Amino acid sequence: MSAMLVLASASPRRQELLRAAGIPFEVQPADVVEAPLPGEGAQACAERLAREKALAVARLRPQDVVLGADTIVVVDNQILGKPADSADAARMLRLLSGRKHQVVTGVCLTNGAHCSVTSEITFVTMSAISEKEIADYIATGEPMDKAGAYAIQGMASRWIPRIEGDYCNVVGLPVALVYRMLRDLRKD
Image 1 (tube, rainbow, N blue to C red):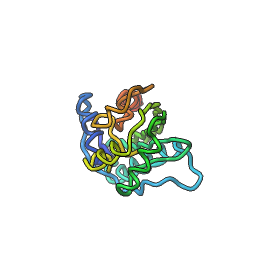
Image 2 (image 1 turned 45 degrees about the vertical axis):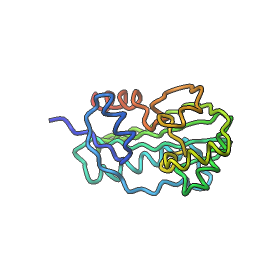
Image 3 (image 1 turned 90 degrees about the vertical axis):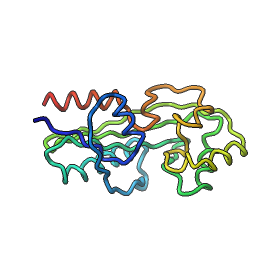
């Protein structure tokens, strides 16, 4: 019997992406503090948090393959995680308005014997957004549990004229990368 893939995340977006790709999995969220360390860069932070999430669940599920992921939005070398409140969401959206930014997702796969960690980076261009549009968007609640305070697959799609890289990465999980990592892990 092959090991079950366990997603160490409660993210409905990650679950939808895995389902859409036909990758069977179970969900067991990790309880990890999602905050950058002092002086830590975005890619290092995303990869560290993905590893921490995967290893936290792997300790409970040593017989399975565990997938941890963490998505971070970066602009002007500032890491934008999930907004703390509506004022924080507005601050983030103002920073992103009319500019290009990066979305970094760290991914970790572990089966107990092996632990593989990497990340995907996608460049996203956001149109200028008015203060009224920002307020109206925040009032919908959509930005509140998303890195960078927006969902590319939701209402914010109207402000995203261009992306360079993996669209699924911006949603929250670079599926093609995860599939390659799974295939490589199962070869071992």
